[in-house]
Image (cartoon, rainbow, N blue to C red; front, side, top):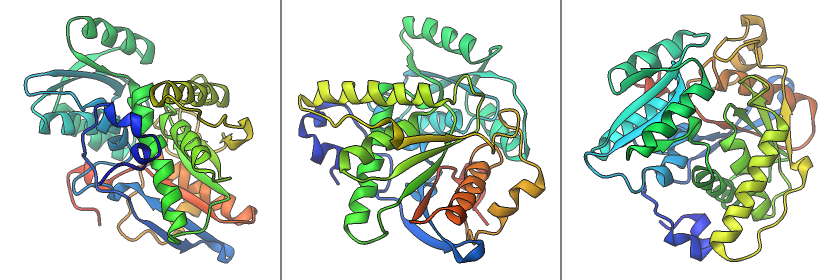
Length: 322
C-alpha cells in the first residue's frame, strides 16, 4: 500500500523506501483510574516480526542496502534501535557494526544487550559524541552510517508518515482526534516527526514527549529544531509548501526521567502504568514504562482524548510476549 506520506506529497515517492512493516498499526482504547479513557497506538504490532517504532525510520534508512554491505549505527548497550537495525539489516544480507557505550541497565536492557552481542560486531565508545565520530569515520570507508536512534532528516520521514497514518485512522473513526499524544523521547526523531506529520494533517493534537534521556539530548529546543529541519527538508524534496509548526504543538515532561538513561523508576512511581489493562503489550523500563506513567497521569488530569504511542516490541526479547 502506498504510504500516506507519498499520497500527500507525490514527489517524495522518488526517495528510496523499502516496505518492512504492516501498517497501519492498530489503535485500542483502555480505561485508567478514575474512569479516564486512554487510547494506545500499538506500534509494537506494525510488523509480523519484532520491530517497534524504529522500523519506521529504517524503512528509509535501509532502503538501499544490498547483500554484503556494512551498516554502522550507535546506541547504548541496551539500545533497541541497535538491535532492530541489526535484525533488519541482516534480513537484507548486510552486516552491522554497533558502536556502544555503557549506561544504567535494567532487566530488559540486559536481555536486549545479550541479543545485540549475538548479531553485531561490537565497538566500544565512551559516549554518544565519540560513538558518532567513530561512525562518521567508518562512513568515509564506505559503510552506511545510521545515526543514534535513526534520528536523521531521512529517518524522520518515517515518523512524519506515522502522523499522517494516525490522521487517516481518526478520519475513519477508529479513534477521536487526540487532544494530546504522549510518546517516549530519547534521540527525539519519533516525537519530532509525529509533531510535523500531525500538523501537516491538520490535527490540533499536541505531542507530549516523556523524557527518558539526559536533558542535553532530550530537550524541547533541540526537538523543535528537528521539527524545523525536517519541515525544510520535506518542503525542498516535495517542491511545495509545508505548514509551519507552532512551538506549542510540542511539549516535554521531565518528571519520569528517573535520574539516568536506562534507570528504571521506583516501583511506587510505576503504579499508574501497572493499572493499565495491557493484554500482550510489554513495556520496557528504559522508555515505554516511563511514557505510560506520564500518559496515565495526563489522561487523569486533563480533559479530551489522550493517546499513548507505544514504541517497544516485546518480541525483541526473543520470546512471544505474554
